[in-house]
Image (tube, rainbow, N blue to C red; front, side, top):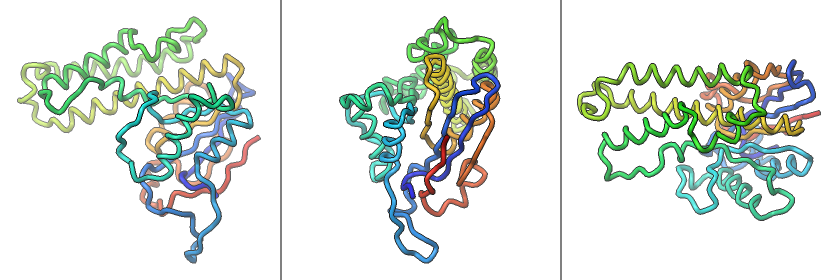
Length: 275
């Protein structure tokens, strides 16, 4: 058993990339349990998700991890979560370990989008910062993705529609809120809805960055890829990979849909099978 995962799917048989296998492993960041147990309550031997991911890397996989591309210590939302701490350590190990170097790609760029924020800032300053950074992405100046979407190797016919879907969401957002932006934010009837919309846009950018990075990996002959991230993002990534890269779901196990999140009792799964 693997401790620290709630489900997986294996994608293959793409009509565009026929020799590529992608494994997606879903996570729930908090820990409803601290060990894997059978139905009668007995502890089942297991390994941490980070140890399983390390084995995959040593067997030729490249790992895309929902981690912040930063080498320093972070104050996380899930400080008491054993498996979250272990995957963070795995990423940090990859910065110095020769066997792991360049085999783990952190794709959580959301912090970069909302950087330089402080509680002392006003709502107007925070909103202005959000919109400026999202716009940097939308006008093709966002620093973290110019190595992917702006690469001459990227086939715009594959990723262009995905990119323009985000553009549309952003400009629709501006249209809806333009009368409030900057100088009238105090008059917005539902600020929570505003920030929820921004959070979704930022997640869309992160997920786009992830699939654009996958494209770069594939055209550089990396045909075994594993993605580990939260359930909300893993479900969206699976749909994006099937829609734009024409992958098919070959196998699925456990919880891979937000519709089933209420069924989660622990964060353990059986070992996935791959080619």
